Length: 284
Ligand code: NDP
Image (cartoon, rainbow, N blue to C red; front, side):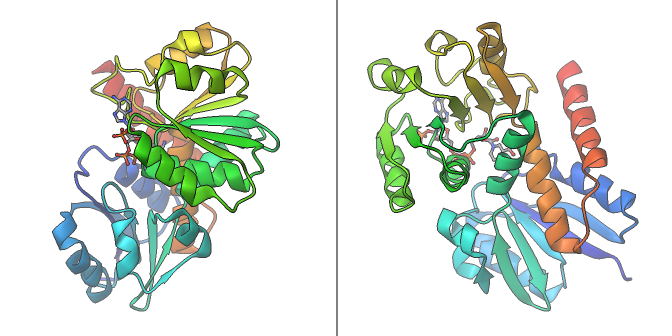
């Protein structure tokens, strides 16, 4: 009866690896907690949040399509998450729901761990959705020299660029078209794919041709399934440093674990659970 629940609220949620990763962590830490995914439609989101309070959930993760919409239903929002405009983690303290964003810190931690320090560097972000927002704020906060937001729908890139003004980093928005994007890529130190191009089952898709990349550049792909996307494989073959989105998935999860439990997360165990599941899905 003392078991407490942590929810994942998304739509759809059935392919999420978070239940596997967080339950492995709870078991390893000897905590009487269970992580469970719930498919919640946008219309049901307020009721689901009221349910978290009513049933004494310890907290929740929030994923597509709720990361932005959830904010207006929370009792408090951490300042960083408020600035980003997206929440992926909720902590329930006695019926008071506070929202956090661990995607941004998870991205930054995995990038730094791979050996890239964004300070003073020129970065190009492909995509302008929720993930791109977290990445853009993380890079601006880490002292990038310039940012380019390149998106298929240029209006969305413009909105994100506008949201980033005032942070002291020059930001430009453009499309993914060669004549606009290639000049921006020429001088870039880091290229981040925050589009969903390349995510299983669309494993053949790339957000840009690898021929536009230069040896020595860093290429980070938020897509983590497959573990090595077509973009990363081609970038690696061209002599780029490549980083997979698995680290971001892991470190947004370790940060969320600590927010819920107040304890350091068993990152090793969580990473193993993720790699095992992804390798199994790629053999199949
Ligand atoms: P959104 O739906 O909010 O945004 C999707 C983005 O991808 C938009 O910029 C969209 O462009 C673009 N896009 C989609 N298909 C294509 C295509 N074929 N060619 C070019 N651009 C395309 O999704 P999220 O921002 O939440 O997620 C983006 C990706 O990042 C997903 O694959 C997700 O799994 C991954 N992710 C990984 C995380 C991790 O921990 N590693 C964390 C969060 C997300 P447009 O605006 O023109 O539609």
